[in-house]
Every structure is written in C-alpha cells, then in structure tokens.
Length: 318
Image: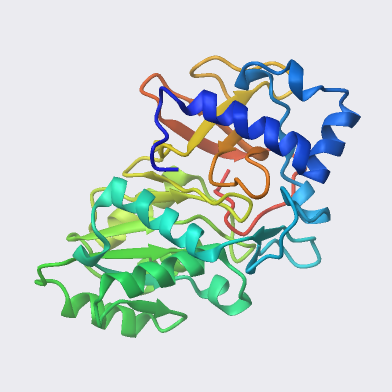
C-alpha cells in the first residue's frame, strides 16, 4: 500500500478492478447489470463506480472471509445506515496512522483531544476507532475523549498551553460550535480539526461560516479538516480553507451531475468519485453523494451534497 505513488497508481487500480470485478459478488452483479465487461476496461476513467448506497443494502466483500469488525455510519433517525465490513482492523488503524503521519508527523508529538460526542455514544464508528488509536499511540496521559464535559476539555487545554507537544482538538462540527459559543477558549497554539457532522443538531451553515465562527471565538488563524467516511478506509486532510489533498492511496474523480459517464474538467463542480486502494477487501471504486471539484494544484474541495440524498453523520455542510 505504501509503495503506491502517482506513477503506478493507475496500474495498481486497474489490477485491483479486475480482481474485484471477478471476486466481489455485489460489484460483479452491478457490472453485469450495466453490461460492462471487466476485460474491456483499460483506463481508470472507464471504470464503473459502485454507488455508495450499496453499503446500506448489501454486504460488500471481495472474496470469502469473516469480518473482524463492522463500521457503521450514523445516518439520521429512521434512515438506513451504511455497514462497512472490515477484514483486518489493524490494517485500517495502521493505514490511518501512516496517512496522518504523512500530513502532520509522528503521533507522539501531539496530545489528541477528541470531541466526538455523537460518535462515541452510538458505537461502530471508524472515526472513533481511528481517534482511539491516535490517543493510545500519542503516549500522552492528557490525550482522551470528551463527551459533553466542555469545562473539563477547557481545563485540559489550558493546562497544556506551554507544553512541548502540540494539542490537536479533533471535533465533530456541532460540538466545536457549542464549544466556541459557550467556552471561547484561546486555542492559538492548537490544531483545531473539524470532521464534519451537524446530524440535525442545529441549522446547517456553510463551511466558510463555520470556520469564521471558530476562528473568531477560539483565536485561531485556520481550521483544519478531515474527509473520511464509513465506506472508505483512507482519509484526506485539509490544512486550512477546505482544500484537501488526497493521500497516495486515494484518487478523486469528478463526474457530471447529469451524465454519469462524463467526467468534469479541473475547476468544474460535479459528483465526487473515489478510488480508495485501501478498500482492497471490499470495493475500491465508490461514487459518493458529495459534490466537489478538483483544482489545478491537485487539491480538491467538498462543496455539499446532491439534492435528495440522505444525510450522513460525517456530512459536510452545504
């Protein structure tokens, strides 16, 4: 996985497509319904991407194996949730660690404060599993999870202001807003990372509005972001302003909103399609319900959701 680079990504992706087209029963059936022969595909642009909704209705597996764990999406009340069967939990955790280190450096250089109340309460969250791994690998007695105990969180942050390690506050959107509005603590030396997720807790706002509130109330110059979802085992990070860079294991394509076979040019808005090579045991070719665009510098933006698509717990604001 870690030998993947820009030069060999397409070759590896095509080889994985051939395997999954044959050994993944759901994906194979999907290709048959679309009358696509895997042998006729010779470039990644021509690969049919599995709609993300299939994770709500089917057990997506390549080959025959029993899952070590199952990640589930939060969704909204009464809505079906996605189920991602995970063959090897340690692979996911080690992969998430490698991606984080490629952006931010070693885990033991940070205190991880995870403000993820809704995710902790429901269980089955890939984000909580990742955060728990980061907390343990940080080897910091101050790292940990916070539910609704904002005052304890503020006390910990104030205690660590002059520590040699930096603080990373990783938080679900509505909880970060509650912190900013009710406990305007000075976080100028911290990395504040929003993971998305309003979950119907309050009125949806734009990312620009969110970041403006957090910067003003928490005394920070920028807000970092994490782009991940239950159906993917890789994550992308944005250091500021919502411009994400994909790790070596991922590639984003943008398709036309009205034509599923037409890819959009750089700078044009469309539906995000993700190749995630970490999904080696499930399906690596996923069409999301997120709208976004690619930029000339190889970054990408997530701009909202398709109309009439169901909200996900890690949904970013429109």
